[in-house]
Image 1: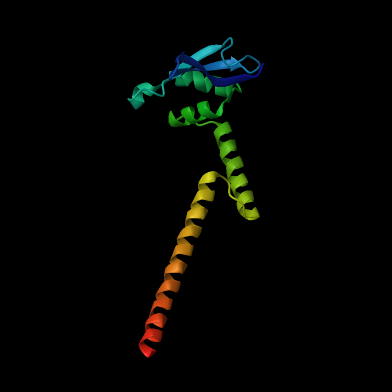
Image 2: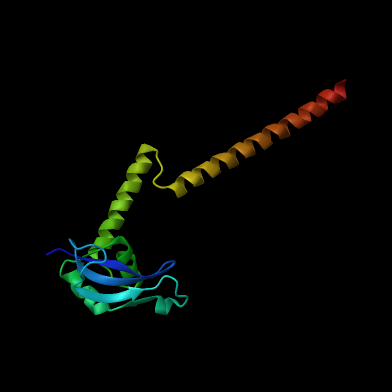
Length: 145
């Protein structure tokens, strides 16, 4: 039996609330759960109340081979629960960034936007330098006539 740690959406429209559950991987998102591990309320202002998690049971399921979803993995890391799946994901991302850099491509939109802004700033600086060089030459030409 393959177990996943994932979230079930609850709450009303525009007011989401998520339960963190251990679920058999073949069940749907809101299907039958094996165990409720905690809950996550993204709208809650107090960070201490935002995530409530039974850390012992989460570690138990991770030790049994449960695979957390990406979101649950980040929540577990914020709670101080390190697991091999987060490390594997970090190494995959690092390798993908290195491959993208080697090919001269951007890994994500943020890098593309940063490169575009840098190119625009460089072009503006070159234009200003060209105008600064042209200005004394123009004054010199006017002074000779």
